[in-house]
Length: 266
Image (cartoon, rainbow, N blue to C red; front, side, top):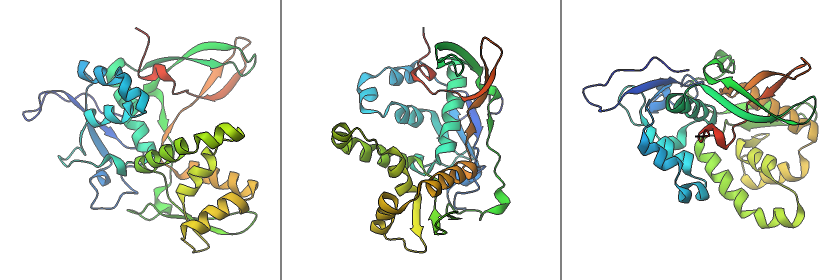
């Protein structure tokens, strides 16, 4: 995921690291600096720990955004990047690399044992995480637009892989819906994300048409198939690993991105 540490350059007063993005830059337009497929970040310092422990930033939910702003230098070729353009899988890779550089690759966390249901501690070596395999040759270089035919309704969806900008706007929308969520007990995370990812239905790109389809016509089987397809083609870090229960049973689980990821106990 990352290359060996680079020595201090003549231009910079701090060591940096080149992070290879899971997307390899393939889905960014050629004139976007992220098309290089790399991002150069600096090592975390006490200044970044100030960011991580700032209650104001934590309460606003923007602490990791501010951390990335402080750490990202350029695209490896001296060109600045726009964080909003980052595909979510690429952003995840940068965060994981930053965590490794800041606190090391050993990540300890709590999970619920799949066999007993009881909470237990486990750990993984973040350096051992791999990226999802994507056959880039099947898709158009420089384009973040895709087509998927739903297996049941046979409707054709145009969609995109979500970016950091999309994620911010989704978070804002979900916060606005909180009062309705409290009243009904129903969370709208899945439908809100799908409305953002889908860009057309049978060629109709009107937002009202997309919203109505997701809210009233999206069959559960089609929804599940679409979300599985989207996950399979989106370049990202594979957070799955084999957990071994005390009785020796192995289960594939997801590495939880808990608060201790960037705030390890001290």
